[in-house]
Length: 281
Image (cartoon, rainbow, N blue to C red; front, side, top):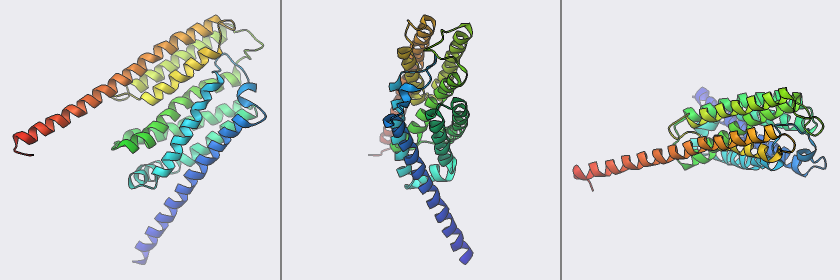
């Protein structure tokens, strides 16, 4: 009996440590992002400007993601949250917080190649979490808000940051150098790859993945705003075309959600009608 009790005690301690690590990691990363906004270095406006840099306001998607992740940390104390966050996701969430913090630090000190490495690893970890959540049957509103929504936004947004970081690490400075042929090819190829990712989100399920599609569309329109026609008409209008096209995948997700909701409502109606026929009340 002591062994059984000891096992329960060890499991309780392990789960408590993981919950605390999730909370500390979420607060630490949120603090890092807040610091980049209020710091005297003025990171969002003094960093390297490339032909794939979005408008600075696009980064305010981070507070939304971090607030949702804090909600996830609260949700982990529920039975359903413990089942998914603690028992399935496990230590991947603290690892994601660490990689994100290292990416923010590298980006802040303008070590863009290190930042690229950290954001690639961060995407690989968030992809694992994203898949864990997708494989879990979502049961209620809290599952949608604190499991699906934050990690869908996180996944879509960090994929955009991989492309942005690659341009920062290896691309030319848009303020001092014109866009040459290779830069235009790289921009167009990156836009095409983002459309492929957007397409995969839109058709990943009957209802698609609306938050991830919105994250990519948000990024593309921010690039349109930042890359003016005066700087490079090719980059501006190519990005504008792809941004408008990405709205198609957003509409696909909205239609999928409507069809899913209508199908669920029809099933409920059918169930009520069957109950009446069987003499139910």
